[in-house]
Amino acid sequence: MSSRYDAQVLIRFATTLLQRTGLDPEMSGAVAEILVEGDLLGHTTHGLQLLAPYLGELESGSMAKSGSPLVLADFPAAVTWDGRHLPGPWLTLQAIALAVERAKINGTCTVVIRRSHHIACLAAYLKRVTDQNLMVILTCSDPRPASVAPHGGRRAIYTPDPIAAAWPTGGDPVILDVSLSIAPNGLINRLHAEGRKLPGSWVIDHEGNPSDDPAVIFAQPPGALLPVGGIDHGHKGYALGLLAETLTSGLAGHGRADPHEGWTANIYLQVLNPALYGGAENFLRQTAWLSAACHDTPPRPGFDRVRLPGEAGLRRREAYLKNGLELYPSIMPALAPWAEKLAVAPPEPLA
Image (cartoon, helix red, strand yellow):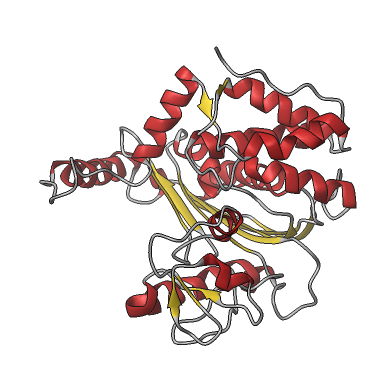
């Protein structure tokens, strides 16, 4: 990893770069905050690594610089927007604010968004919901590219389609953010650029042979990512991938069956209020018991203890906020040309 930086300084740096590329000030702050939050949680391929590509999308006009989503449907607990290629982090935060407000009244609210731009790290949105004693489910897909093969196939059909969720426990929330391919595209791209191999046979070449070489994805004809479960049990990740595609593109009414429109995202967001189901106290009693039972499980060889999903990320976030955020080494060099072009002073590392 590289030098350490103050997280707030990084947010201001990213905000300034986005504003000087023409993005609305409020949207710039929202995008910068979510990108840095991704790095704080350890999702280094979906934090500030995305800032340079986002700036390129703004410069080309592929990401809208201002505006509002178009409301396609608005019922008390079911809302659908056309995101009109607005920045995904800003749109998702707007959707969370609306869903939280309505879930407190109705027990649940789902917001589905078509034609958003990319939304970065899903885990970065979740704690703001669990801090209000609510549960959240979030998934997205990009109907433009295809990189994941269906189980038993050798041609890519859909994207890694992460699924994220979080809920309160009375202590740390459980926070999960799982790509439905073994490896996300960001990791494949990074390892390929660095000439490195995958930890296992997580991809297949164009003939369907398992491989640990990310280069097969970029070959002609191209290979494909394997769904979660891999060669042996990929039917599980495949099924979940189809679920994510249906929750996002299916409910949004726009996706792979339509003409491609560049780098986009379809989003499914649901917020649930435990108080209006079995009761908030009973919910916490159940989630706290299960969390404690998992923690108390004797670890098997190779593990010091059993952790909950998101636990390591929360500890990492606390340490980074206290001691400074370590960025992946390629991030600041990728932003240097933009900083020079836009006359923005790069942040100084902490001493």
